[in-house]
Length: 144
Image 1 (cartoon, one colour):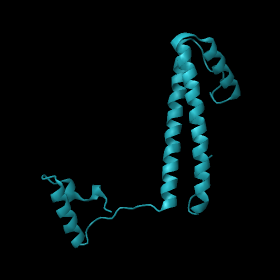
Image 2 (image 1 turned 135 degrees about the vertical axis):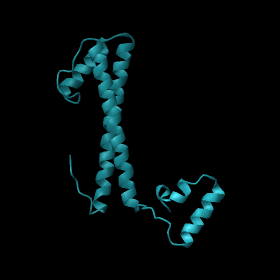
Image 3 (image 1 turned 180 degrees about the vertical axis):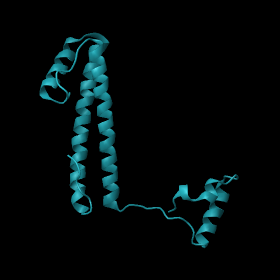
Image 4 (image 1 turned 90 degrees about the vertical axis):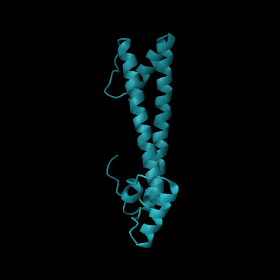
């Protein structure tokens, strides 16, 4: 497998087609100049996928929290703690979502459902990461 970004002859070619690309690959291979691409082993690949998915779930959760705070600001409410993940904040959000009618209330309830879904997804990915990590002795845990 070759790293496409490092094959300048193909990337900079003015005649871009499969036949020309194949010729350049064969030529570079015959000269032993085809740049190699790193393909991780199974456990490393699994860890990369799991951490990427966890990171994506965290970004989605952050977006949902920002949306919740935006909805609350538009109705003159503020979360009573610095985090929406505390029990006090969760209780407050549920009370406001139930008490608010119309589309805004529906949006708040939807955000809370999505927030719970992302929290569960993050926990699941954490468990996957914890199950893979022991198989990779070079991996260090650097944060909680």
